[in-house]
Length: 93
Image (tube, rainbow, N blue to C red; front, side, top):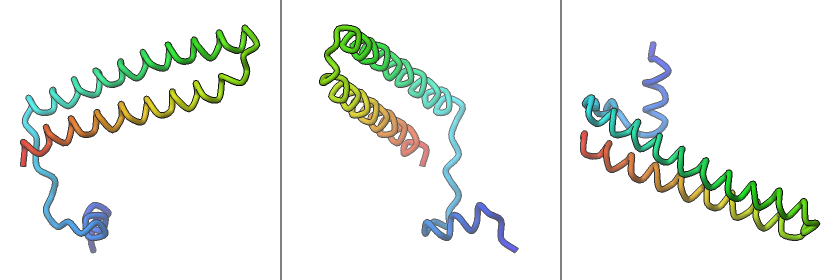
């Protein structure tokens, strides 16, 4: 009987286990996560502040645009983070 991990790997067409990471690489991945989490929080605080300011001033037409901008920037930062993590992971393999 196959484990859930083995079945998942078959589904994705991979038979090799994931490469093991060194302690240094794990620390680097954690540092990248922290760095990008902070960047995302900074953008959320800034843009949510603009949303609150626009609402307080009655500029309701700007709110959807600001929320879209926030979603776009968060997605871009998350993609940037994953790309940086992939570079670290590829160095392991």
